[in-house]
Length: 94
Image (cartoon, rainbow, N blue to C red):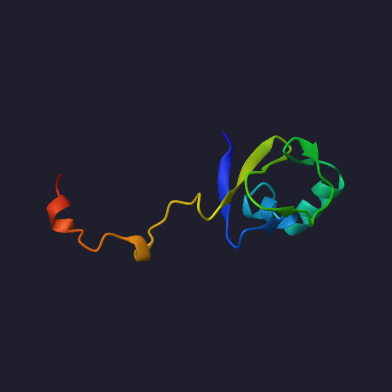
């Protein structure tokens, strides 16, 4: 199973992403694995720790993979677009 990990700000560096996605335990381990060619992005070996990921890329480290998501992919409550007429009492105990 591949997890989707949402990133804020529109982009993230490869080294930061594999740590955020818990594909490695530390930044030092990320640096070592990337330099050793153990990290792939969309199936291609990537040795640049600073490669910019913008969303939609599949990143794999030694058989564990994570998909780079965007804030739009993340399902969260947005108060600005919420329905102000929602009545929780009406929907309670349905």
